[in-house]
Length: 566
Image (cartoon, rainbow, N blue to C red):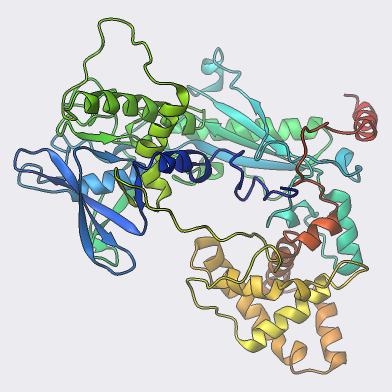
């Protein structure tokens, strides 16, 4: 394969770890796994003896309710959805939800403390092209250094720092490399982007949260999904320890940026109560079905086995009792591996309901890593990767192939039918084409924005039913509507005058529209193959080894660091 897909958007050869390419394929290869997609599980079914006998799910395409029977049930739907399934699994024995006799399901929900400060560094501008892709989302990792300074810091625990940057694959956020007051278009814009591309370094803090009684989820008493199943209602409140930790992150990152001769990008919030991420924003939700040594204060034992229903297992982040500063994926995988080993041993003995007892002698592993990984993939990850589907152990059914492609380049991303209706009218789309070509016109070998389908991308962006896109929708549509008389129905003189007035507009609404539309145009343009070439991105190459920065790049960087006294 001469040019494999970039790791940031999937990996066709499985070199970048993810469930869909690393865990699921070997599990399917055993011929003992069936993945049922579009199956929304909402209930664990019990037999007359109170043991799990399977699950009930709704087919999201047809709305039909179906059941799957099993000797053991494993929930790995994520902290929120696993809790939702248990709380919706009500019966005479469990009127408040399955395994919730002591009110522990949904409690002690946690997320990583998180925030980001980004800096732009003149010392990194205009460097010769280099391949900085590395291994996927590689970054420098700085572990917490203040374990002996809690008293003076004023908060317990701590955080790690993820430092990323370089000339990696351009993304939708590429426009952030531009100065705050920069409003250029055309050749000036292209030149600024090329010069500053790769000169931005991000500092991401990820910290430990202490579980508290104010963070939990429960079934909403009135709101249901489209199939009539109660949804979750979340309660969230950061503690003082977390907000002080967030303030310390900001102060630390700003000091590092300043010492390196850089300038922070964007608005900086120093108040930790405002700077801290929203609950769930770090997508590290853990807790809600925590493990422990007693049914009185936990839901499952050390193997993820439910106290109340011994042939019910939980193998996702819901079982964690704390949220350390380390990202939780590897811990979740390790616990799922251990739970899978335990379930395999119980199944071999013909009794999935038996309680596992701590061994009297040190355990000697009986299966190799590859076999264990297959089990982890089958038991711990397949449900989540199958779009909340049902995992049943029988002859495998081949999954539907995923469509290839990324970005807006037609050669890389064949047209696909979206799940939502496009909102831009023909006139709005035409105005978008004129404006995007004004921002990035054809230049030498680089095509104009409309040639690459940028207006279509912007139409898809504002039409998509997601929070960021919904927020952008009125800004973009109102701005385009206002331009239709001049850009679509006006003559050449009117078009030219209207376009020339946009970058220097004084009113806040026009300024907000132009800056956001330009940012979307830049993002859409430079995530195409043509955009890669224009900005000088040379990653995404198949090579036996990465030689690292060239001697030329090293010499330039060292010279600029010496000028800073570093």
